[in-house]
Image (cartoon, rainbow, N blue to C red; front, side, top):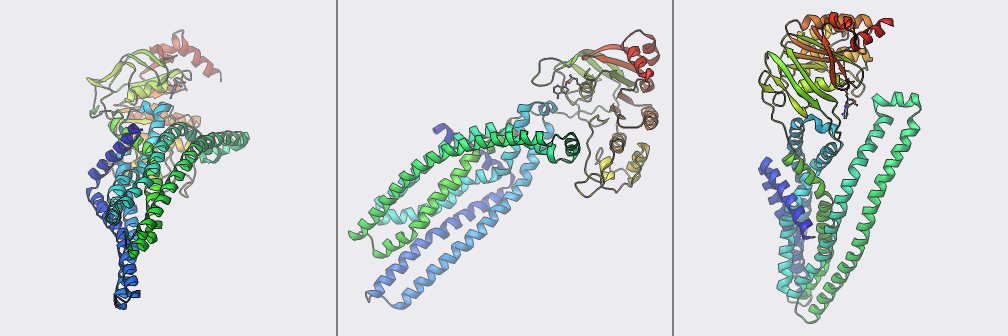
Length: 579
Ligand code: ADP
């Protein structure tokens, strides 16, 4: 149990130190606000005693009515002060959260940008990322719980507690008894909810995925045509049921523990009331103090419940999630990529093998290859033979499991992606204007407007540059072929000394495909290009062709050499010619 509390407090303090580091002014302001807020609530009880004592004295003829009015006014002012402080402090807290959130999301995205890309191929690491994103959203509130406890509730209970101890020490200590059961219950909740968060993350991702299949623009047409809606609905409901079960089990355990501890709290509360009556009957406290405490008991108990159930309780349920964010920020391995390939002379692939995370079977096996500057290399082979993976390795997106890739003397794990451009097989459809869709590939070069227009024309895009693409922001949707041309325009717009094209024309008609290949041939004249293609006839634009099968290079040569050689290339080429 102590370990859990220690771990939670450490997470909160770590979070706090991060927040302070980012926005010291906001955190100092939050502390001052908390003290004032706590003070504003606590002075009410003192003002109440003043008023009740003066009313009692006035009734006994020992005090003037003006004194009663003055004390009533003071109580009114203290009430207004506490209400104003409450509203102002809540607003300030929300504002701080918004300001800090900007920095937290920046921190998170900067980190995500630096983690190895293979992390996204690993379900477990994907879950860590999802948990970190969720944790980042609540880090501020979880961490400031410490500040609330120390400065807001601390100020309030210090003043009220001192007041009560000074009246009757036993009264003050009984207050503490009400706290203990609540603290106990919340620590247990932490355990329950940490387990729940771990169980729920993967199921939640699955559910969101099914939602996307059912409602996402890119999925729902096919889903409807296939009549697969009911199928996904069923899977969605199953996911919901599983999530519900996890949630229900956590809530039941939480409910039982809370019930038991609430009973203990109520007993302590009764004890406090008994002591209070006893003290006034013994004349150890004044009637005014008795009335003031009685009048404030509701607030006192409410505040205790709030601090334990709402603040500590909420924080204990969410501290695990906030911890995920901090862990991700502090511990996730990142890459250090600072070197540019510039105008390299050659790329050497030495004994290269690669397996995807979670799989021991390599999908690229012992590849040895040298690509000279200015060379155009085509990669062909059956589906699943490892062509795309090899391209990603050459670009440095994936790090080889064994072996290495060298750009002259620089390892592919050190290169940043400047000077490399690509048209991906699964390209992005950015829901932005056509111009931005193209310029996003080189956003900081400040090229003249005409550059992206030229890239668009070269790729055969025939719509206005300011047209918004995609439906999300009231734009127009494009055909698969049109989107592919946009992706090609994006690839050629980016300044590069290496161009990697992974099935760049799969959605284009044969005439357009042929035109685009000629264009590639022209633009890659003095540059290095790697082209993955299914159209063997078009691979003849390459200086050299490699044929892949089951992760290995099984043939390598020029078009003329390969069509004459009795091998896989010739077999595939003849098969395509037939059609
Ligand atoms: P190609 O481009 O030749 O069609 P890929 O490089 O895409 O082949 O895939 C090579 C092999 O790697 C295939 O067997 C595929 O199933 C596997 N593969 C591709 N992506 C992943 C991934 N993210 N995780 C695990 N295996 C993968």
